[in-house]
Image (cartoon, rainbow over all chains, first blue to last red; front, side, top):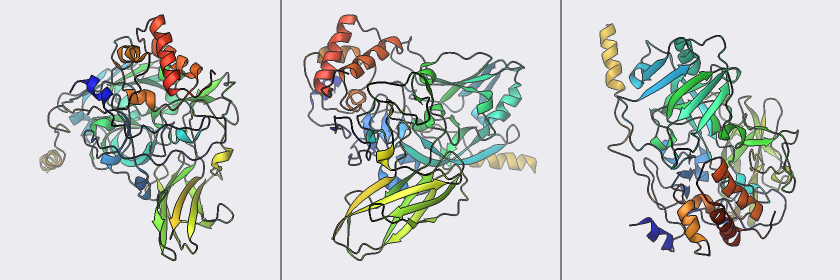
Length: 401
Length: 102
């Protein structure tokens, strides 16, 4: 079928419901009634789908009832329409060049050999900076994600620092540029490159080839991607092709214009007057999302319901999660998992509740991290033009009958 | 013994292509408003990205849409003429606008 025919079809895209709230208003809950698409993308089960070129897929809320997000339901976000459709793991190489003593071209075999590099694992949350963006009012610019532009996986790979050690950094090395393999329709379009300062790159940063015990799915960056635990995913470059060490920062669209918030204490601005200075989004703020029950779920009166969800932050760790079923008047402490998955992972929580009244019931979840930062109510979250970093208290409304 | 260990490692971690042959990203149908200017949108915008990328920005102001078109020209180097840029902005605002100029 020609593309043209698709335009004429009356079948609406799964995510084609538009946010209709037009007036300046109070930030609320993100859109949560989007349907799973009927299309299955490579290695993925059908997901909430915003775009095919580039692929933009959202994980459904049910994935937040578990500590690990399955690979085939893990969200997908690319910036360029063309991603390589075939990668041969036998010939694939990652290049390390620039201000190094020895330029390297490393194969996957070499990388995976414990004789060359220590193989390490980290369980970490991958979250888009624009996750939950549809909560912002007025509508902030960008894909109107619900809560599902995030997931948590166990990543296996090698430390970036070990790789750089093997190449040997020259004395004036300062910036590390990471280039992914996605390309645009025009040659002149800038590549998706991230530059990170050496100081930002600690031993927790890895180049991962494995996700939850399997090769990375193509759409999550096969065969190799950057993992920067605790930060938003805009820096976790997928399908890494090149690492270049420099002493000078280059001006890059995805660093200097996209993925930035106002550089003021509230990180906020108004639609009429955008902030003059901005800063990168980098570290994630404390957040929790309920995985079960879901909005609109029908529960029986006096039934025993276990509310489940996940909480995380930038690596300080979650201290507690509180649940309210009376619109925030009273809060009960939820039970947290052991935390043995580490401080960058989802911390799962659960709480048994017993709906005793007919009608609508709201369930709210609030996480507090180990340095006392807690999630604000959604209405208290101030606006920013990119709709980044939403972390309002999650609210799910169910029907008790 | 060491040799044995290496063999075992090879057996448990074989290198194989993730999927057989090339992957194919499916085409997704989107409901498109065939308003004035859609031809220009089709020719200039949809050569690079899907209509879903437009549609799922939510309803926005005229200034926002003009800004998006400019971003494509300035940062992504899309060869869009001034005339088409104006037509595309009108289309986007007409069909996916929020009623506000700014």
